[in-house]
Length: 246
Image 1 (spheres, one colour):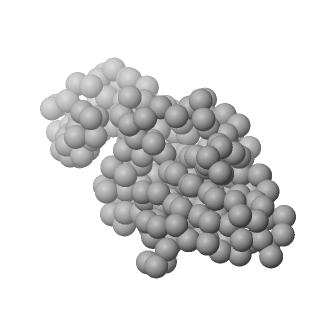
Image 2 (image 1 turned 120 degrees about the vertical axis):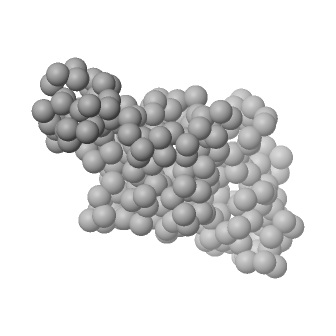
């Protein structure tokens, strides 16, 4: 039987039972087990892992584990550029786009508000989400660690927080979204770009008081919804401001 020693760092410990957190531990591995197989057998989705050092050498997830191997497993590094060491994924995604599972509708809405292309449908099955992520190059957002263990998902984010506003902060911080945000550029319902329209075109389509108070309007060409900078918009600005100022 193959035995290997593991040590997980930082937030990866949240997925482990208390007796294995923040310390090295040895466990048995099936013959021919890969790094990915063992990491996930221990409860950690491979999408949460950024770097694996096996006996001090950076390796990919398909590396086979042998008897006596020692593995150090790390999440995303916040302050250190380790890009020359990375072998877990072939390449980063060119564009940040998301697909959220059925339990993250609030987060999906807030990401759209931030200008991030985010697919969401509470009827999506896990298999559909995985296929969409693989085919369209999207990051999976979920609180279901089993979904993130699917082999065809290369990029994902396990969301720890329960409240949508805190989930948004968590995703912003983990993926460094502030520099890529384009607030109020997408329709919250259709996930499609908004376009500016003149007050003359907008006023017949909005409540009279809105038409009298506001002069800047955006419209979704798909659903024809019209957006303006009212109290709801100011509330969204207040939510985003501390995230964008980081």
